[in-house]
Amino acid sequence: MIRVRFAPSPTGHLHIGGARTALFNYLFARNNNGKFILRIEDTDRTRSTDEYIEAIIEGMKWLRLEWDEGPFRQTDRFDVYKSYVEKLVKEGKAYHCYCSPDELEQRRKEAMAQGKPQKYDGRCRNLTTPVSGITPAVRFKMPQEGQVVVVDMMRGKVVFENDQLDDLIIMRSDGTPTYNFTVVVDDVDMKITHVIRGDDHLNNTPKQLHIYKALGYEIPLFAHLPMILGADKTRLSKRHGATSVMAYREMGYLPDALVNYLVRLGWSYGDQEVFTREELIEHFSFENVGKSSAVFNPEKLLWLNSQYIIKSNPEELRELVIPFLENAGIIQKGQEIDKQWLSKAIKTLQERAKTLVELASSLRYYIAEDIEYNEKAKAKFLNEKSLPYLKELKESIESPSDFSAQGLENIFKAIVEKHGIKLGALAQPVRVAITGGTESPGIFEVLEVLGKEKTIKRLEKAIKAI
Ligand code: GLU
Image (cartoon, rainbow, N blue to C red; front, side, top):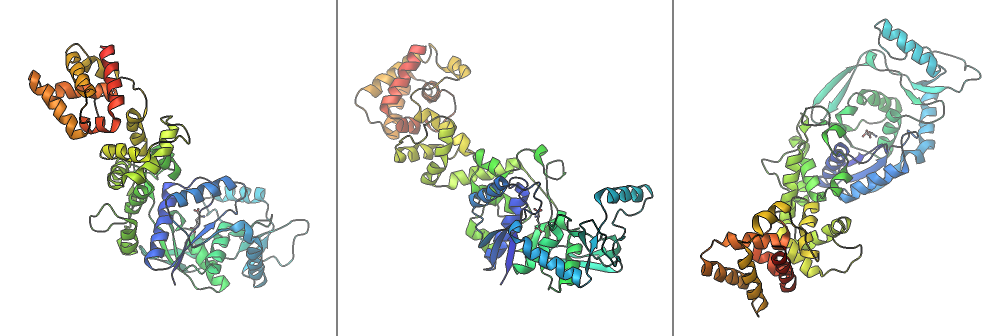
């Protein structure tokens, strides 16, 4: 049974890199009928907050990265870690260290000045009696000779020299355990078979391997995912734009589009770009995960989002866009709105809106009572030249007429033919009169959705404005 985990530290929101790690774990689990576990690594109490835990969980739920077990919290498991620490001390595999932070800092500086490695000098390693009056930290006894080999599913063997590894602190003097230790205890306790995480942890893995050995446990398989970079090839960070998953929700991205984009940051399947969730689960494997870092490309994400908007059904989009309409003040919170009509309006806009924010903003001219003109568009199209055509159109529409897109096309055609003008000479002024601007879906469709009453009102307004 394959068991994997996503183990975020709640010291910030769920970001793009974390979400991709979670996604690869999730897909690997689903592809293998395994289990996906969520574990919150909150042992650093000064930096972890409950708000961030909630934010991470919200992000995971939004992306539909459903976990099978958890969320576990490391702060609920301090007793477990403590018992393992005591076991190692008893077996002579860990020891009490009485050096104070100031002393350690002093020695580190000295070592640096002398060009020596800045690791713990092992001073307390062989103490036989406790130092009274000081509560000690606990350090792990790292082997000091030989090598350790990390076998990585993507990179193969990565060799580390043991003399480079520090006798790391596994429990601070305040009794709190540290990351490299808790991660091993938990991965063992939670029967994790594959540790899939960012390659910023690759240097931690040899230390963890020694802890596995000391505890007498079998070592899981590892996959260290290459970092995600910004366009300038440095590690993706806020400097490159939004990095938090929830910021993408606010910008009007669909969760499935973001998932699709994230999976392609490092994984490929032929040259297919757009995948359903089922396809991702079916095809995902580490064989097709790249070894080099992927560059985050916001334009491609936007393109993918537009593809998802095009292929979503209008009813789905309707539910997603309502909060954006509310936020933009286009409808009031909880306002009743004819849902069937809204779907119809959305359908006309799907091909053009790249985000839900854009979709909501285009829906404004359908929903609002009134519109405002773009000044340039007004000057160019609402003038003496278009005035007679607009008047004529209004009259034709006012007399009993077929108000379907087809019926409207006939009305437009009759006017255009009568005056020997191009369709644009009528359609563009009408577009400005109706939407305020010069871009919209086909004008007949727009009018059909807008309805006769509002169309007449807006034509009247334009005529008056001229
Ligand atoms: N808690 C670690 C982090 O957020 C992840 C540790 C791991 O996956 O082993 O970077």
